[in-house]
Image (cartoon, rainbow, N blue to C red):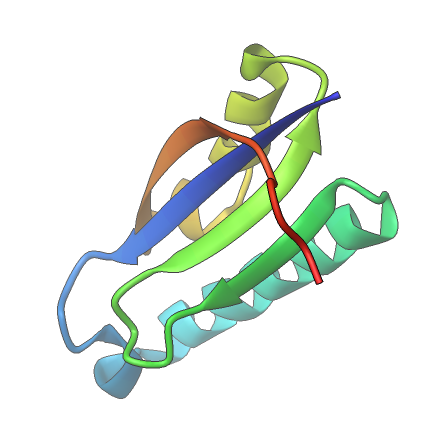
Length: 95
């Protein structure tokens, strides 16, 4: 298994303070998606910046192609609430 990180960024600067009901529902689906990946032992770490600038998901995947599918299947990406970028990653230190 290889490790990857994907960053998600809201499409507007004040997203946290101005989320619509629909966007809030999508972010709930995003959270559930990540919880499911955690249960499958794929997610290593995930969370948002408290200022709303971006969120990160560090996870394991079988290949770059599989990692792209994981990122592209995130409801926040599918629904266009967040834009995402994927990078190969390696956890070097962990508590």
